[in-house]
Image 1 (tube, rainbow, N blue to C red):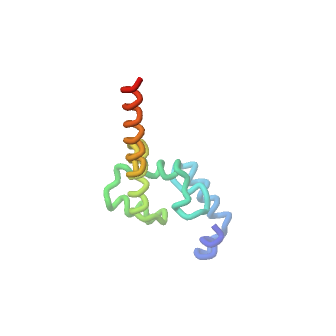
Image 2: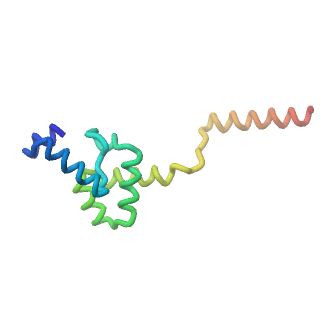
Image 3: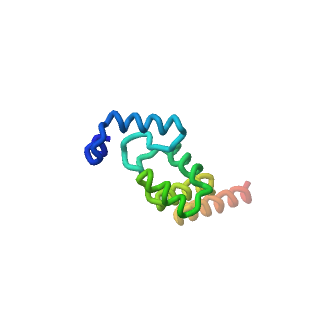
Length: 111
C-alpha cells in the first residue's frame, strides 16, 4: 500500500478505507498487499465466479480496474475447473501400480 500511495499521491489511510468499502460492497480485492499470485484461494475463486459470464471486453475492463491480466484469471479459472479432476499418475507411479497389481494377482493364484 505504501508504494501505491507514493506512486499515486494518495494517503495510505485513504487506500485502506477504499479497500474496506470495496470489500463491504462484495468487490473482490486481495486479502493482503502481496502480488496477485499471493491472493488467497477464496479470493481467486470469488473472482472466477464473478467473471464467469464476462465476454472478452468486460473481462479486460475488469482486469484493468484491478491491475490483473486476463491470463491470470484464465489460469485461476482452469485451476478451479481442474480442482476435482482425477489425478494423473506419473510413469513411475503407473509402473509401481502395475507391479503391485501383478503381485496381488500372484498372491491370489497362490492363495
